[in-house]
Length: 301
Image (cartoon, rainbow, N blue to C red; front, side):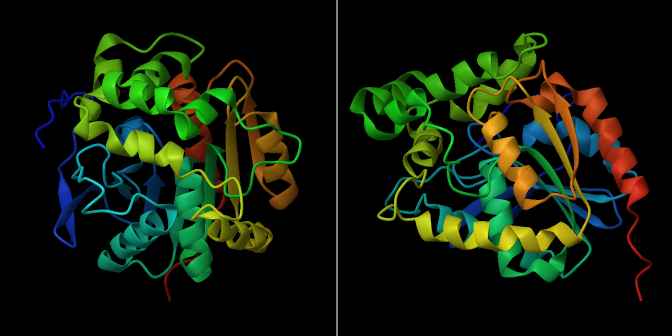
């Protein structure tokens, strides 16, 4: 897929991993200990562009695009299983391909939390530090009802129609997921550009339809197993940066993270939305830089 995004906004070389004939796109910038940044829905690696720019002078910054997203291939259901389990397999295949066995700092947002932490649960020895941005890696908190707009997209034909026909999910998110100031037209266009046709919007819908709410849903057991492992990650440094105006991943989710990772360093941004890294870019980048400085990894060997 050709995608025109200003190199001023996204000045990175493209890399691809072949996954059964599908191109899995990723950014791989800089050198040093690896920092893996896992995006959610309906974003892509573009979400991490400023963080990559800020860290590539001190670390190896890796940011994949999930299949169906960003610069990766966007196959139909006949060629790809748009499920949580497959997403975790894909991410693990990339980490294996890059030869990363340890010293990994994992950055997660939205669906990236579930995908990234499920991968981490398989090989926890790889993970050295965690950076968590408005996401979950556990079941819907008992205090929280499932959001009605997601329910409509997940379970109703009209919701699916709006997502696929009119790009409702990506276009609306680029407007309502920030709170401090609107995204510029150029940045909004970059977020929605990968999802420019009915066929190219398949992942934005399949992600929502794959949200595991009950035991009969395909990814439910993966969520249960991952959630059970989360307390074991409290023995390593974790930074949580949280937008308080997120209408999906709200204070109920942050409270659950505090329960599971009580030692984590938490910074709340009450006036920021779901795209917290857009709303509070400078503050969060400074927090990440300071976090890495305060928690250096031991010298290899």
